[in-house]
Length: 201
Image (cartoon, rainbow, N blue to C red):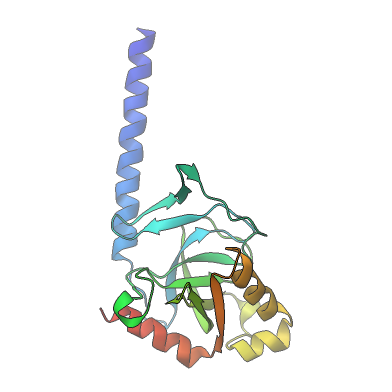
């Protein structure tokens, strides 16, 4: 009887988990990049300060930890300097020099829950090459009054000096070796152009 109860409990747990995962995948896959209030949606894959390399499966739209040789992947560097994630229903196509993945975004500020969908404001872009492929990182801020004085990369320099250097140093080194090449910083107009191009597939 005890084993039967255990079996039933496990079965119910798996059904609930599968149903929850299915619902989450549906929400992720139908979330638009843009909102009517000019904010942008992002899905948090890696909370600020952490090193576990989670990413969105772009086919199944499910969040899963990356692996190397069957082992969970953790970056061998300091934790992420912001909340790292992707903008749903975007793509940097290889035909245009991209990496074939959704557009990456780094949300500054306090850590957010992995898997959560955040409304953010884009303020610029760090233009990068990853082994020769376009791998830009949009830079975003939360929709909160604390950040109301920031709307551009220049504002970020003025009010939070050194943050650009921290971000650039992280992305230049977090993969080790010479994989990442920094091309420079772009303004809001450049960032939104990249975003627009990534949604016009």
